[in-house]
Image 1 (cartoon, rainbow, N blue to C red):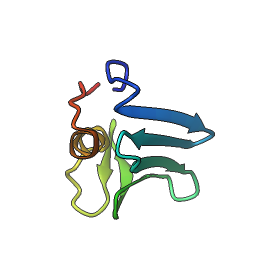
Image 2: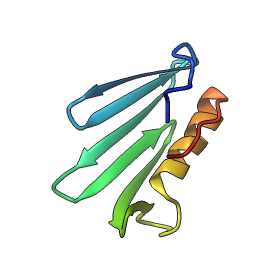
Image 3: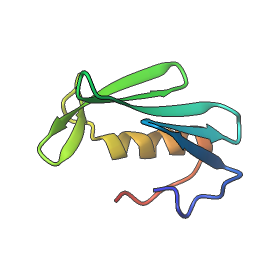
Image 4: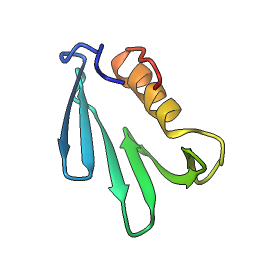
Length: 87
């Protein structure tokens, strides 16, 4: 998703099961695999989401409709002003 994004707008690094995206504004988005709960957790700004596996997608465990990559694309748009192509 970030291949076409300017590193000045969104920088990212991976350490183990954690991907940290740092935006130009210095705010961050953290994507973290939670193996014990079999979830992917995402945090950005003052919000957090937990995603469960549903077939071949990861969906928000609360609303059961928001897909992981759609949520991350929204976060990138809101925090960095960039549009990304979904997989």
